[in-house]
Image (cartoon, rainbow, N blue to C red; front, side, top):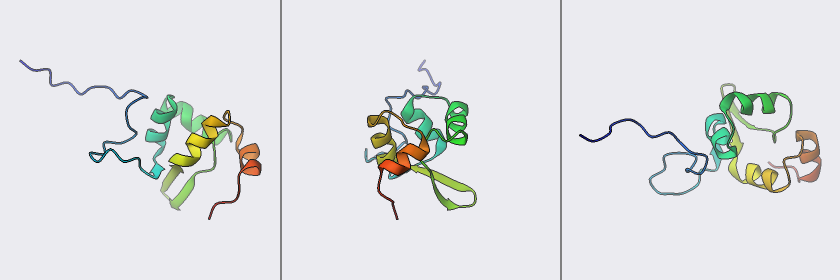
Length: 92
């Protein structure tokens, strides 16, 4: 009999189930946490303490992070939000 359990997501898996294989432009907190290899609770704590780049607020209940900005932030060593904002040009 085949194993019907759902496989756990790994940090190396694509952020979302996208059959086209394309990266999304914006990530939810859950997908951003998975991309960074941390738990959702840790990700939210990092955001609350200003250790992540500022999110994009699409509506009062819809907050997303730019995939490209998270990648650049990691490559820069993960500086605090204020330092990151000072380093990068303003985004529209």
